[in-house]
Image (cartoon, rainbow, N blue to C red; front, side, top):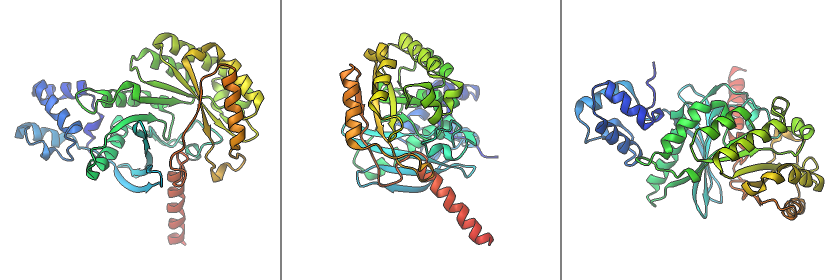
Amino acid sequence: MNKPSIYGLTFDQLVLWLQEKGFKKSRALLVWDYLYRKRVHAFADMTDLKADCLACLEEHWVIGTLTQHTRQESADGTNKFLFKLQDGNLIETVLMRHKFGLSVCVTTQVGCNIGCSFCASGLLAKSRDLSAAEIVEQIMRVQFMLDEAGAGDRVSHIVVMGIGEPFDNFENMTNFIRIVKDQKGLDLAARHITVSTSGLAKKIKEFADSDLKVNLAISLHAPNNALRSRIMKINNAIPIETLMEAIEYYLMRTKRRVTIEYILLKDVNDQREHALELAGLIGHISQLANVNLIPYNPVDEHSQYQRTDREVVRAFYDTLKKQGISVSVRLEHGTDIDAACGQLRSKQIKKSAAEENVVAG
């Protein structure tokens, strides 16, 4: 039986586990420092720990379970990783270089069941949730690469926007946030962490009550129920009215701004009337909301959608601005390396299947 990864423990959980094994809290502080400040690869590298504590750790835990399957680097410096899990499943993680720092987009599930009609992630159904350890290790693997480069670079921002619906893996996702935020370790600032959801209303409220103080992004992509249900099947179960009520609760409880994500699909949701309807939908929360317009990344399997022309993007932006809506256009990264979320994984799985068929034939 495989031993679990120690990256899945919050600091409080590590303290409790060590105390149950007869060790003092100070041992937990030392282990935590080795994991996230010194960033060791093996328990044997924790040279200040006594032999009995080291032996106990090695008996019950491992440091990490992911292996790098593929890495692609874009002309703009974006790195896209395909990691293999212990069970053989593949997940994607992306490192993006911004003027404000280094941002990592993490995955929370193997596959996705939300079924957005424009998204490569949903091409392969969800098979399981990732553990907190598997989410944390995505950050650690990227940081290891940066450490090896020797430039002193550090992951400064996290977006939970990779494969899967984060709020459908709520406990593991929130434990991940607690681990990477911990000031004794990676010490990622809460304001530098953003979680995106397709709109699980009950979990948005639970998130508001969690006091994690990180940023929230809502994948809206349409200003009315008819259009949203057409492109996002989740809207059939959680219509816009229910979603907006949850967003309003979040804003009331946290007083934090929310980002409204809106992928522009040519001749589908990108016309002036759509912009006006969107402004009307969110106008009452405009002081605490920003619309992020996202150029569509074409996916072979979703050939019914095309990229909105640049002048139409500008017109949509201008219409929202004139209605008093805070709006931005997402800067694209890695467009030359399968930039659409889930695209690299999907292509790799198809390639493996094709190779197996050739061998079988």
